Length: 564
Ligand code: AMP
Image (cartoon, rainbow, N blue to C red; front, top):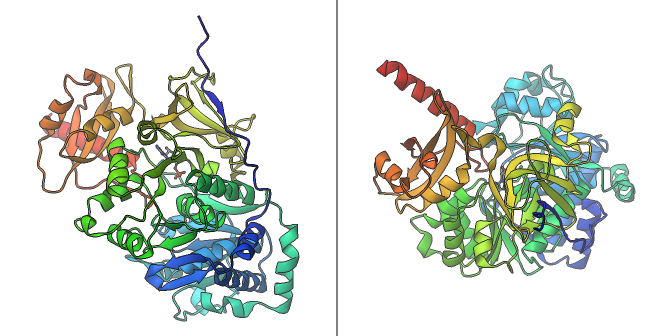
């Protein structure tokens, strides 16, 4: 008998990695096609060619150096999608600064944590976003700002922060207007920018991303030019992007989905970045695709669902679409099929990854058979290595679930200022332990079966939530479903499903349980089914199962107390 093949795969070693900095690579792209469309920000009425974008980037970079910021300094950005975001991303890379992405949904405590932990010397901030008055939150954290001269902030709670640069065009005490940054450039800072270009190294840190908080604890993954420039490039390769492509980017920029799979994938291929709105809006996204004749569209599964189910969906002409990426969470087969047939995205790909690996390590290819393309996260990306291991660290055979561990150029430098957590995440051999459970088939296609922590063990049986979710998706009244475990005295854990029904539908919890009964193993039939109208989510559209679990646990404890 032949030995079962181990779940250990290596990506292709062609094309070669880009051994360059983001700034130098961007400049080369600009020089190749200065007049090509680079950026459209619909909600700001901005349209820039690569040449025009580069001029803004250089002016901003020289301005940042003119403020006295030094290579290696950290600078935060707290803003929804905007021209300023893209310009700051590229300008900080050119000036050798480390951009710290602050989630637009953060409030005072999280903002303080992000800025203090990374010791930011400057912050670029929007004045407000949705219901959040950013300047009021900043005033609460740094009341000293109002009485400081710009650049001379000395705040007790944010001791490293000197500069607050705000967008939006209204003057505020203590801050510098983003539009005035170019005026801060000096002949010396411009010369410095030129001198820095050849001296910056691809492995220098360029970005700190606080991970999304599906686990509830934000940590700052430190990523280098080499990490994210290459990841953006290979992700764009898998979509077959080229200078004629226009990618609609409704996903947030503070997350790698926006700034790497969106911006850097475009820049490395000379494609155009199209931003439909400040934050995700299904109608604005559909309108942007139609108006700009976008050829590609990104989104987490819930965004595609919101677009497909929008009452005006049928009225939009999406025939220009070809490709795009669905990622960030399990991508239901039924949704993928609708994206192909109803949104014309015949070459849509699924990507899998995590912030700590820049992010993507698996991605499907337009040439994969449709069945594989809609039901797996594809095969391993070039220059990467992945193995699936059991609890003892042994590689599992193909087809058996194991924890996905990634090694190669994409693995982060570490968690900023936290060696202990870095050592817990990246082992001595350089493998990043993702905490995701996956299987690999004989051809190397990967299936994500759930988070290690979300695996439900009911009476000794392992239940992979994804499998039960996929089953419930087949019910015609179900729009979205999330399955997770809740503590149970008898079985250790019981299975619970939160279900969102399609608009106008009604169903009983029993009806949904009956749909499963007899068709999947009894221990996979959810003991609890709850009909809900929304799920707790992060701003990147990731469902927070730990929040649902906690709410359900409290609800069940209350019910039990009432019946006792
Ligand atoms: P983040 O670091 O915020 O990008 O979150 C990464 C996590 O999102 C991964 O560890 C996975 O649990 C999940 N994830 C990302 N992409 C996928 C995908 N295509 N399918 C299933 N889960 C995914």
